[in-house]
Length: 263
Image (cartoon, rainbow, N blue to C red):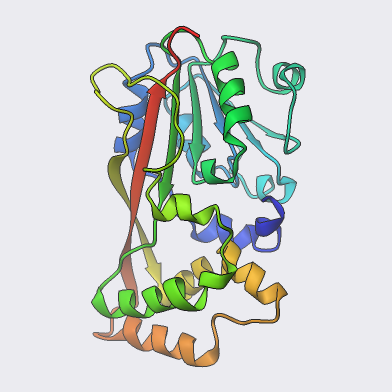
């Protein structure tokens, strides 16, 4: 999975959205203490930055050293490159001891994981019984009717052969993902709970966002340019209608959240 984002690591860091404060406030309200959080698959650290405003210390890990290079450095965030698979001994050495973490988050990455193995590790490392796991994804962004039409054709038709099968979990808004945890206090299910994040972009930003797709990189490696000149022209024509260079781009977010319980 890490290799899918190496070549476009800078585009990813520059164009991927941050997440709304409401999301983190909701998650933090479900953890009795805010001492230590683990951001798994942090990428270029978008979520870790927000966690650092709430939790005393954040451990942010990723298998891609290249993506970590673009993460914003903060005094209470420890970034670590980790191998794709880790034993419990390695987890303890590289992350934290058993039953020591208040919160584990996975932002836009859980669909890449080996779920049974990862969940076993999460249950081992979280504090019992109220340690929380929160995983979310965001789906295809929305701008306006004209731009959405061009984007939907690119996403659902042109790029479809180049997405990894795991992408289906994102398209299903994590509703079908296995999530063997108990509802957090105040909730009667584990989600998804819906949020939205917004990012102001111009047409160049938006095209760079598309180039950060794993499917874009896969297509390029197969000799296919998804953003052909005619597609770029169509995007720019739709984008510049009305003369507004910058637009608010909305990314729908879907959160699964649960507590570890007595395991």
